Length: 249
Image (cartoon, rainbow, N blue to C red; front, side, top):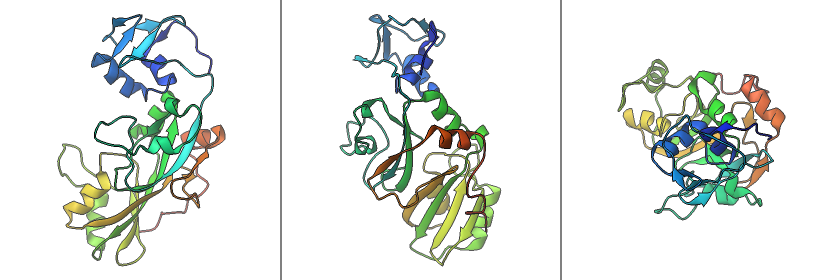
């Protein structure tokens, strides 16, 4: 991960594992970043290799290595690197020496389980999360009551709940009376739970099983594996090893 200096501050931070470039921009504008002890809030700021960059008074430095990991997140763990009200962080389950450089690509809420990707590559994270990439996220949803096809048909068209943009699923497959496979290409906050709640369903289990071409597979709960650069490249190219999976309705 060789950088060419001078470099934009948000790019430097993203390469240091602070988060996606967009998230790093929010840290800068919020006044949480200093360069050589001076607080910086301008997004156009550039830094050199010898500059000292700190976020919330903690030194951040780019790593020479790029990491990609897949985790099977257990219930009760949060997808954030810091929350004073929480004790169980999903990142802590990735037991590598440089785990503090990692951040999650997108989120799963505390009660949900399944696949979460971690990296220190802010540019890749930004691409995976951006809606324009149309990267599929696949979920298994278990409700306490029978799920009706007509409700899911409405969700295909898009429903308006609490924001100006519609919540919409890309496709679905009814597996049994209470189990449904759902595929999304966007990642609005608690999107699936809000959609099902809108129709009066109580979600008992929500498991993410795939992001693009990367599947949860038989990865044990609470365990992680390394994701190869080729897997990431395949995802960003729009290819998938399982084009038929989750396609039915």
